[in-house]
Image 1 (cartoon, helix red, strand yellow):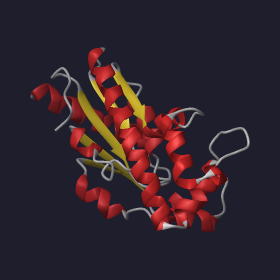
Image 2 (image 1 turned 90 degrees about the horizontal axis):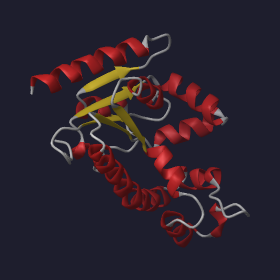
Image 3 (image 1 turned 90 degrees about the vertical axis):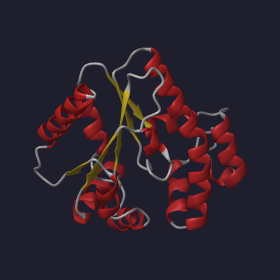
Length: 210
């Protein structure tokens, strides 16, 4: 059940493991009329600007070593730290959930006030952050392991071992399959755009029937 501000807006959650193609799915959904995307990664980037409380909390937790000389967050150092230390990962997630979830809910409220029909929240840790309870529909995007590794290496310019270590601390595909209304297996040469369009048609049909 979504966090309904005006009783009309519906919320679609898009999630899945790294390298699955979540952002591409959100981009396709954004082409529909009166649909707004809230990208959790973009929210984190906004909150990570020098001077923001989120960044101050990261510094208090992890120290100066995860920052560049200009005061900006050194994302690579922080990523290496959390991917190799479960305790560090939990501490960062706790901070992120505290600040990012509040910001996403605020943006949902703003979209509702603007009479947006559908808000899409693109959140890698949708379930862990508890944001699934604000969604009317959840789309999970999955892919096989080799393809995810290939995409991560290309996207982030990292080696295969680094990509594997990132995936090792994420959920298996079955985790998403069991918790979602729709699952997209975004394999190589898959017609992703057509599949997203089909799912969106099903969602809008269900909304109109209510």
